[in-house]
Image 1 (cartoon, rainbow, N blue to C red):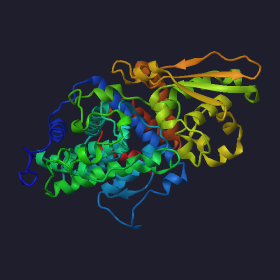
Image 2 (cartoon, rainbow, N blue to C red):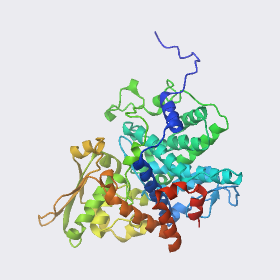
Image 3 (cartoon, rainbow, N blue to C red):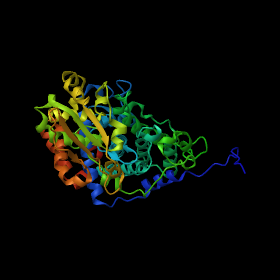
Image 4 (cartoon, one colour):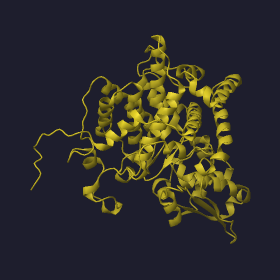
Length: 494
């Protein structure tokens, strides 16, 4: 018997929404590794935002929409003197964090950068903490920020484990918006109904397309898209806190819900679930798994699928640097996701195009022995035509083992191998790097380098004595966790 779609029977909230709401309201983080990793994540994410302030294309986006706006207890943007409303502050913080593609990463069926959520978390926490102090209440502490980060990482990361949004053309920042909505609503004091309402609006919102991340349209929007998403999460949380009704069937409503409208495709080549099974797969309960296993970008401001290729190229640099003109071809052996997302031929139009090009991110370290944010800039690219000449000699091939182990839960490798062949018939050894520095399997190796990265990033904005004070604070887990949020933000202001 055909379903009567005219029956106006309001459903209960979708199970996924209830799972997320119950998680943020009830879960207790008891894993020491999660707390410790969250401290490093906060440290690294703030540093990435400070470094981005060196680039005018980033800073032109920052500040109040209406110049001269005064916001009581305004949220601060680290590395600046801005005091903004929490929605715009979340946008600005998120923009700086993401601008250089240098903050943490999560790779699964979907990928993304869970620390993008710090834009909303930090803006809301700073504003609320100042308000609390002004009214004679106890401030929020950095431990509250770390807890919100662990939860935002988990929401974004678990939703990404087996659900590929990029396969249906949606950008991963949809998960930033959802995670930021949940945790900032909690920070605001939302009850379960308010969190459910906010989450439902996040899913029925218009979702960003991946157009701006891919050739031939790759551009700088990919550097502020996450700031936009975390900011929208704050706005939706605020709307729900004002009593706005929710949309219970936001995901599952036939014809009109997210699953039917945005999570399906008629392209059978994508090999997704059958048309009648378009719903999220949650293979495990929400906990602290994602924060414990998150990937740090330690060595290179580069899209994570290319991190190991850049590392392999650095290894080969000393052998090939005097023979660049003698190279016949360079073979990059990689995994399917890297080919689909960042393998590009032809002209590269802008820095955002270059830092999402596997061949470019391999050519630069082969030639120069380094890969920094400045290497993507127009002036550097124009001054060194040898980069594009070498790109034209590159072949990119998939190794099925690399592809399989990229998705295996106990491995999550991001393998790339680079081998250089010369015109005289000789060649280098194939240099294979399966796990980048910053992977959990290389975490101990990466921590000293991550700390040095933080020191370097701090030094781009603050005098030496201030840098040392901040470094000392982040070195002490207990002291950092007990620090009032607004006191930490005071230290990060110009």
